[in-house]
Image 1 (tube, rainbow, N blue to C red):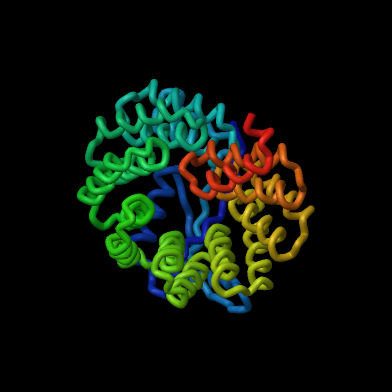
Image 2: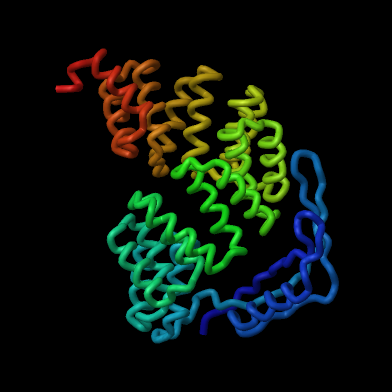
Length: 378
């Protein structure tokens, strides 16, 4: 018999804006915990907590519940749902992707007609394995099994945008997802990004951003995305800053939000000391955030003239799996201009073009580079 480990779970009784969490939502959460773990216990008294961000103290009211969980999960070898859930655990928590894939395949052998687990495996094959043909097959199968699921329809829209670049099909899928669930804030926000980046329909994008935040005003990620839009597209920097600060209030520990605000403070407010503070805070929260690492490298190069640190951070970012043409192009320029390492610069320019063959800055820079160093064009 495996031993049990007790977990304490603190359920917030108020949203970040101070509104009370509906009691039925708390009760539903406790029911779900009981269903998942077999038993749950709770305290009647309210727990009061405090946390601090940038010198401001916030107070929380919390309900405390306990669950006892086996140290070594005992799986029913014929339970497809349990096997599929364990696959997610092995991916997200244990980072054992080989075991996760085995479990995904096993769960679908046990029940090949489950749309949710088929869609989850499609996400895994996209994000982890980069096996896009298999992922597309799984996405299509999941929608054949359940054509009326807005979340999986939206996920497939994202796949068709980012991977297949089939923008007409992606737009069709986004519109279908929102027909199926008009109040889905996540898909509304994702469609706003699509309308900005792909269709360049900024008025429609803004409408969608605002709609997404009406549907869920407490989501830090979509608030940050709208801040990016207001900075990059509308050039409304005061509104952008307000949105960035709201996103940080909603989630003070979101490294992506902090990194985006650092970019804003660098490009718009020109406050380099605050930029450095934000960059360090973001990387302290998530040392493996490749994009933030590359942005901090650029800052060290251009502002602090700390070239060794800049190179270390650039290399660290690409070790972490960075696959953004913009950063590859900048690192190439760094190696060319600062290090005079032209062979490495050539490799990085080619990497930038491999990552995005249509990236105009990389095409321009590499054309210039080859004129100045013709031996690399042979």
